[in-house]
Each structure stands twice: as structure tokens, then as C-alpha cells.
Amino acid sequence: MENKDFRNKVPCDLCSKTALKSCLVCLASYCNDHLQPHHTVHALKWHNLINPVATLEDRVCKKHSKTKEFFCRKDKSCICVVCLRDDHVMHKAVSLEEEFKDRKTKLTRVKKQVKDTLKKKSAMVQGIQNSVTQGRQEVDRSKAETIKAFNALVGLIETQKVWLIQLLEDKQKAAEQQAEALIRQLQLEITEDHRKSTELEELSKTEDDFRLLHGLPSVPHHSNTTHCFIARAQCLLHVETVRSAVAKMEDTLNEQMANIIREVNLVDKEEPVKEQMQMEDVFGDELGNIQRQHAKNVTLDPSTAHPSLLVSEDGKQVSYGGRNREVPTNPKRFDSLHFVLGNEGFSYGKFYYEVTLQGQTDWEVGMARETIGRKGLNVSLSPENGCWTLGSYSGCVQANTNPPVLLSLSEEPQKVGVFVDYEGGLVSFYDVDTRDLIYSFTGCAFSVPFLSNLLSFRIYRTRIFPLFRPSTEEDSDCAPLQITPI
Image (cartoon, rainbow, N blue to C red; front, side):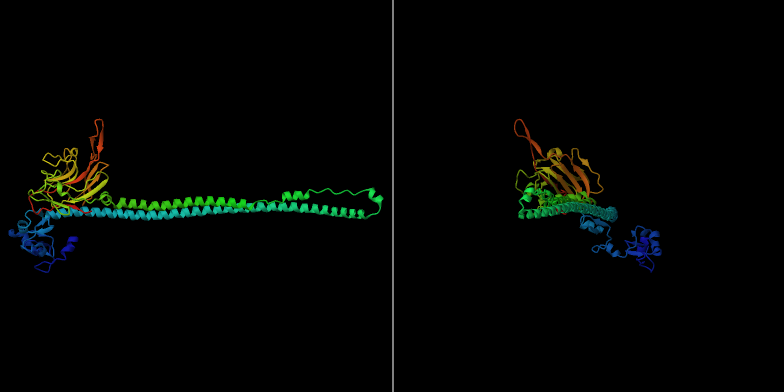
């Protein structure tokens, strides 16, 4: 259906009908009727027919007026057979059909990656929505329980307050009743005392000796009623006692509330971190995390480069010059193998760098101890000799173990990332474009033991350096091996 809609937009060059095919040789589009000679005439059968296109002139080389039948992978352009012979003879070129199939394969892979990413993002959106809903439900339950707990606490405090006040009131009422009884008793005693006082006053004024001698009224005993009242009429509850008890309850409540609020704030701080980790798990692949956390600036050391290698001024590119140059001789320089080391050596931690290999037909990339042999041809790239490298030889990529491991890759990587964990003894190689792990050296012995005295060995943390070898084909147009920014 899609092709039919596409054909409807291209008219036949010989009539008003819709074109069925376009001819790359005739550079014209034909309907079914006018296409018949291409099926019946022998001289036309070899013509290249494709689905109809409206811009056939774009498929013709403007310089040579020839159909573009090839694709130069170095220059990323479509070329004709004359361009291939004159300007791109040393470049890697393939037919348009082969490049088209390759692009379709890559397109399928990219579509799958995009589809997977969309699926992950959709799952994340759903997860976030579910988390928000669940969070709202949890908050509502927490609010309800909090209100219930505080209402119970307030009710308990209110009950205890009412009970204490009622207790005070009852005690005061009992004291008042006792006071009233004492007052009544005292009033009776006062009346009796008044009577006695009057009687004594009259007796003191009498002139009748016989009456005074006849009998002296008894003096009333001192009543203990007053002392009894004073002993009982004391404060039932000191205000300071209440204040102290309430203050203690307030401190305890504040302490417990501080603990609760601290716990809530701690969860509030931990959740974004947890959420960020979940986001990284979903969106951030393994290579992406390595790139963000461990990327280092790596440059080339010209003093180690083989005399035939050309190192750029910025120390980011190296290429094969074709012949040995006049360079100073020094112990660090490779004199037989076409290697160059990085300026930066590492003896701890984790680090990562990337190299672009586009246009390189054979190459080597990896890490090497600073003690690697620099002179002569007897230099082994095996881990036993302090080299952990990946290389391409005649179109085959291999890990230089002992013996080497030939890697089965769908296509040769154009950009390689190298990750090193010194303490973990790990060197890993990644295809940056596909985000895939190519190969990992594990259990790497970066540090080497040495005899510190006659009785003991010690471990010396040897520095390791990035190692590079560009393509050494006799081709001046070969692109250099480049250390690329991340």
C-alpha cells in the first residue's frame, strides 16, 4: 500500500499515467504500457529498474554524467564508476545495493533500540503514575492514623485534666465541709466561753466573800480545734508540681514528634535518590554510566611513537607516514613495532577513553604496562607480558589473549571505548555506536611483584598506559586513528 501511494506521485514520462518503474539507464519513469520494451527488447533487459522516483537526476553524477552505482564509505557519498576509478580508487567503496542492505540492517537495529527505549519510557511513566497514586494512598492513610492518634492523645490529656480538676474539687469540697464543721464547733465553744466570761466578770465584782469562797467556776480547757484545722487546711497540690509534670510531658512529646518528623524528612530525601537510581537503570545503559563517571582526557606521547608514525600537535591523532622520519632516539620509543603510548599513565582507580577507527583497515587499541618492551620485534601483546589489547587484522577483530580469541561481530566497530578498573583488574572494550560490550580482560595483573630483599617480595603498583597502532597500509588518504572527546 505504501509503495502504491508512492508510485501515484510519479507520472510516466511518456504519458499521463502513473509510473510503475524508473530506469536508471534511461533516466526515465514508465507506466506499465511503456515499460513493456524493457521486458521484451533484449538490449533493454539489462537496464536497472527501480521503484518509481521523481528525482532521477540526483542519481546521476553531475561531473561524469554516469549513474551513481557505488557508495564510498570513507567520504560517505554516492559515486559513479568513473569517480571510483579516478578519485576513490584507494577508498573502501561498495555497491549501492550492498550499502542499502547495510543501512537497512542498521535502521532495523536503531528502530529496535528506539522501540525498546519507548517501551522503557512508557513503563517508567506508568511506574511514576502508580508510584504517585500509591504515595497519595499512603499519605491519606498516614494522615488518618495521625489524626486518630493525636485525637486519642488529646482526648487522654483532656480526660486526665478533667479527672485531676475533679479530684481537686472533691478534695476542696471535703476540706470545706470539714471547715464548716469546725466552725460550728468553734461557734459553740465561743458561746460557752462568753457565758463563762460573763459569769467570771460578775463574780469578780461581788462583795460577798462567802459566795466567792463557796465555789470558783472552772476555767475552760484550751480546744485543739484550731490546731486540727491548721493541720488540714494546707494546699492540696503545689502548682510547681503540675507545671513540672506538664513540662516533662511536653518535652517527651516534642522529642517523639522530632523523631517522627526526622523520619519523614529522611524518607523525603532518600526517595529522589532512589528515583534517580531507577531512572538511570531505565535510561542509562552500562556504557553511558561509564562515560559519565570515568571519562579521562587522553593524549598521545610523541616520544614513544615509532619513527614512521605521525602524531598531531594536539596529541589526539596518529597516522602512518609510510617511511621512518629522523627522530631523536630514546629508551621510550618503539623502534620496530608501530606503536605509540598515551601521555597519561594510571596506577589506581577507574578511567575510560574512546578512539575513532573509521577508515582504519587494521589497528590495535588497549592498555600496556610501562615496562613493555620497546625495542626489536620480540614484543608479545599477551596479558602475560603486560598488554591487554583489541586488534583488527585483515578484517577480523580479535582479543590478543594467549592464544588470541577471534571475535564474531556483525560489523567491525568504528568507534571503540576502553574502560579500565585498576583495582578490579579489568579492561573492557565497547562498541560505542551499538553500546555493546565487545570483550573484557578479567583478572589483569597490572601490578608486579619485585624482590625487596633476600627474604621477601613486595608489590609495585606499575603504571599502565593507553596503547595505539594505526593502520599501516600504504595509503596517504587513510584517515588517522583519533582519540575523540566524550
